[in-house]
Image 1: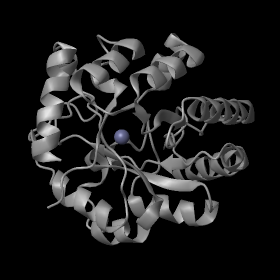
Image 2: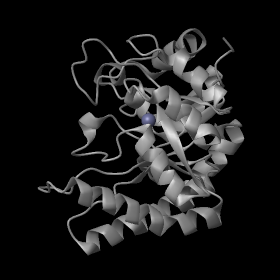
Image 3: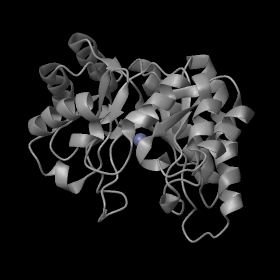
Length: 272
Ligand code: ZN
């Protein structure tokens, strides 16, 4: 099997102890060639300052996390979400991100209207595609495991994401996060269908048993996901981008971030 694609650090991995500046310096220290910031740490540092620091460290930016969260109970809420996504496109463009990752949003609070929420996601995406194309920014739809359907993403499978991409056309793609798609019986065929539309590849692991469905992700190799197998599918589809390690884990957040990065570099070589 080919060597894993170049490593990228998703900043959520060390979010309890490091801001963006420490993440940028940490990447440089540990020889990690790319970074993927979340918007909160980007805004805390300031976009202009972040652009300078990322450039000075010579890092690529594999993505900006995240846009999306379109569904809302009323029209004002949905319009505000669209406006916020437009700002996210500007930020992603400013930092030279390869894509803007979309976590599309769950049901509005109290709602049971799943079809309605999916419609709001579709409408929201259509509303921002013109801005994305004008900025040359790829909108990467990230399907999330269906256990998050209520509160994070009504977009649950790669097939569903690609149906939307078919509709949205140029400038749209998918972010494949192994944690969210590994279980899908249609994964192989949908990865092939995605082809060049794979805009990001997120790596982490599913621990057995998992004690928290959101905040107990494992480092690559700690769980049951065949990460090299899924990466090979991405490569066969034409993906040549980064392997972005993205760990939401209370356990790893408690560790010394330098130790976490060391582990990531080691495991990336062995388990991605
Ligand atoms: Zn992800």
